[in-house]
Amino acid sequence: MAETMKFADPRLAELDGFTVTVDAVRQRADITLDRAPYNVVSMDQRDQLRLVFEALDADERVRVIVVTGAGAHFSSGGNIRGFLEATPEHVAHLAWNIAAPARCSKPVIAANRGYCFGVGFELSLACDFRIASETTLYALPEQKLGQIPGSGGSARLQKMVGVTRTKHIVMRSKRITGQQAYDWGIATEVVPDAELESTVDALVEELIAFSPIAQRTAKKLLNDTDDANLSIAIDLEGHCYSRLRTSDDFREGVNAFHEKRAPKFIGS
Image (cartoon, rainbow, N blue to C red; front, side, top):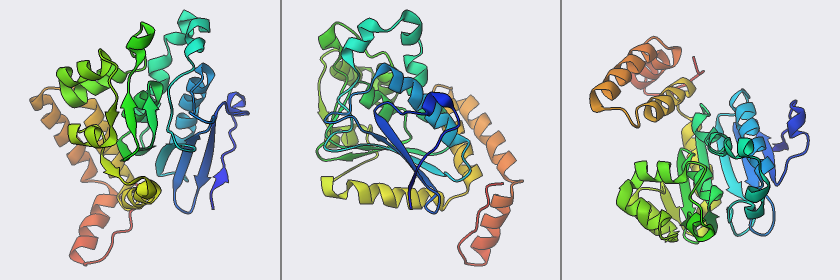
């Protein structure tokens, strides 16, 4: 049974435009953007999202985090007027806050449907997996405001799809469908809208069956070597592999394989 998360940090006493629930039995937490009808993300909400990811990262009950939007849309983007009101110091932290899913050591899944624009797209890009409904439209429309993406969107997108496709999305403020995002390697999967939740549920179950320490290691290694040259990436992979060879989970995995049974990983 999922329960509303209670936070010790007074800055999270009242969440701005989203909810957080934890299901300890299923080892998952759900962050739901919930400001009807388009789940617009406020400036303060960005700060709170970072704090929530940090709290969930430290919560031993949680193995996987899911980010979703209430209703027909993930998020139409940020509170546009808020950019004019924010101080330069506040704006300087935008990318750091929205990168919280990438820094989190646990797997993070974005469940996307409907509008996934601006910071909604950037938040999704910082997650490990993006499951897109066939209704999903992705966009970075900041050029229409005389701006550019400010929370890592263009940088992350260029790493994924290259400069030509990123210019198409950023410089022309083009919307792309969930199917196109899948074809380009942005979305992990694209599914019928009615199957979005069940697909995410299945992915959560798949991920929690693996070793927590191996999952954390794989995520950090892949993130850290994303912009490394091949020889450095291979070297770091070898160090991580060598360290995991001494783990309890690796020993359990090997024994379970030879005994033809499901492994029981403990995360050490």
